[in-house]
Image (tube, rainbow over all chains, first blue to last red; front, side, top):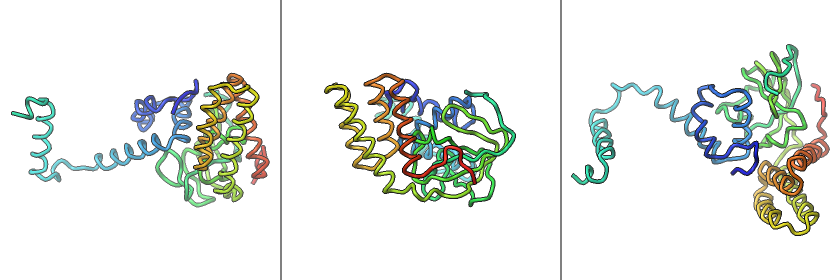
Length: 89
Length: 174
């Protein structure tokens, strides 16, 4: 949802979302970011999802994670990193 | 206008919120009217169309009040009272009015193809009563017809519509 010279595009908003949540944008950049969110439900929902993810992941204690679940995740991650051949093997 | 004059006093302004006074972008709600919250945000009547959302409130801003583009920022803010005249019906009226404005712009531009595309968008958003996007589409249509000066004039017209329809004071007071 772009087209305005002063309006950020959805892609730019996605690229800036971490900086926004960390308070790393200038005030002028923050306002441009928020102007886009005011009219773009999709990007507003994305910001909410990022905020929720950070809040949940931030209080996750590594020792609280089930070992079996951890193994499954690591296996899936290694398979993904190895690519299609690695997954097939 | 970032870094412009910072007022130490209190300023009364307007602020749009989500349903239940949800603070846009922050993921929380304003506290009940009268209770201060950090990072107060508001806007002048001139810039209200940019921020259109579900609820409109009068807000008091205090501490280092300054304007950054279309937004007033302060160290603190508190809701004063809700502007009840802004409701679903008013939002729908505004969206339909924006659609009519695009038709006017299109006629004035003598069938400019770009404006036909904007008109189709406007009809979609007016039907969904999405007032914010309808206003933005009308603004971009005005930019296509008359450049950025046209866009600024269209936003001013929209602010005038809100001011008149909602009986807003350009210099709001408690």
